[in-house]
Image (cartoon, rainbow, N blue to C red; front, side):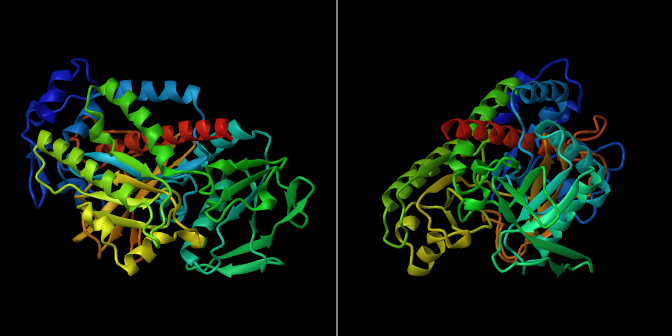
Length: 472
């Protein structure tokens, strides 16, 4: 039984959004070069997504249609979960759309691309920020924003400026503090758009962080703590958002995807779908030292087992692509410590350059644990360059997103790497507002599906933080 047959058997008669029965019985054909389903032609012109032809020419996913058909049940399900779990203050989720599968591959709890969001949706960001602040520290008026130590990365600093602007529009008094020892006085930095950003040295007085003539109510971190938790941030009286255990000093991707397994299983039961369609396989290996070749056997064994599991799923759904996995550091971001593998022997045959690449991540931290994750193809492209959507959320609301684009990478490679660029998603409606009268692959409907899967990852992050807080 293929996916279409499975889904048709479970389809509910009281669906809110009913689409053409032809689409429901379309034959899924996945070839070596592309993934296509022949959809019925829409009766009205599609809404265009500027510069993003994939929103119109990408594969018509029955999964997307199934999500749209069950919108009321999905939103009811999410409301119930958010009553029981606290959403992270903010997050971004990297998605991969393989035509036969739509799944998250990474969740960042310190998102650094607010400057890439569509400015038309600033009101969404502001309203979501108000909601988040009311839940965490409703009496807060003064926020101290602590960014990464990237004083030379003007693109990242533009993100800090955009984030601080959102906070100010939400009614906060915001100042930006730096943990860099060389910042000893207020320092003005120029931004690409001609604006400036002022960093100020952070001081600790007893159990509170302060700036000159500024005592904040809460500390907002946009620093993922890859290098560890600085002493100055420990045991503060003030609210620290996100909590310190959300940083990469303690956080692990394997914990996140273990939580996502639980969320995906629960959600799949609601929709009566195979959870694999929204969930990548993963495994974890510890005690790794790529320089000394320690732990290679563990990684190779998991790679071999996972490739077989993926191949079995590909046979089940008629997918003709070659399975692949991603081996990456279990902690950290910035696209470091990542490799694509299609055979277990590749793990054992790493040359010195490859071992050096895998041995360290951001801030020069050594890699001692890795996650082996099912590789998910991306069949989206922008002017011939492969692309993947990145969805941004504040509190439990989707507030925008963009496509990460890389001209030098393939459909089976990580795109978060040097040479990437961004293309804002031009949402014509919020991605919580699907158009039930249009086909599933029109812009608002595809973005709604992206928003649903991204919120599943956000819910997993909430569970993850609850679990790690209890462990601490």
